[in-house]
Image (cartoon, rainbow, N blue to C red; front, top):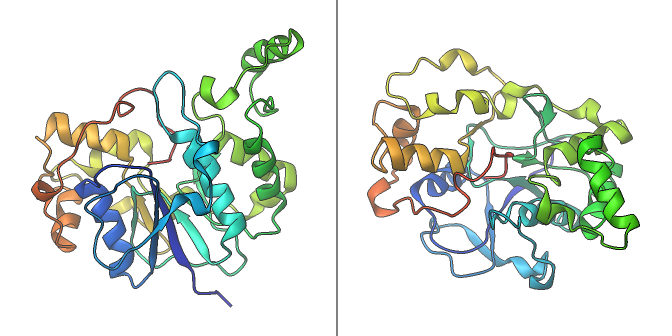
Length: 286
């Protein structure tokens, strides 16, 4: 029998834009409790959200960012694994994961494929999961060389380590603790058998992301009866909204219809450019 789960999210610092407000409100309107972990001052949090200090899960001393872009993506990856190990009744959701139906799981596993890997934009694992244990082991030591890396990335790291100059891997390589790490761990443990089809959480994959904002786009056929979420690809969608639609979704687009449905005013919570918004091809981390 499925347990009742709450939703756990992270927003490090700064104001929420209407895109994050939309996704958070979608869970509240579906009847799910949302716990938003924060480090700094976060404004624009929808009414009804439980705000918690992220240091309860991961202290400042363990904060890690991608060196070239300054993106907190590696910290977000590490945070969600630690949160799941600590909080048994939370399902992780990125702040750009929109809820169509309440999230729940009968076996503690809740994740799905996206373009070949198993993504981590929506994620739950049992506390005794072998996959979770492996992920925590690797993310606890940024100098461990990930076995899931291709040889062209692994060899330079091994040479540096042999020369007494170990490399901080997540600071150097983009997304190294994200879906590729998760997919590797799932395959090592056999828990990949629980991964759900792509349409469950990511009915419009990354290559189709522009259709989410395009007025009149014909996208209904991507959704199935068991689709529970729509990923909005936050960094890229923020850029699309800012550069093509003057910061406000077209009312005839999917995003435009959703903000109307949930009573979100895009002009009251404008998109502010983040340094990492257009820096790299994204992992699914919001």
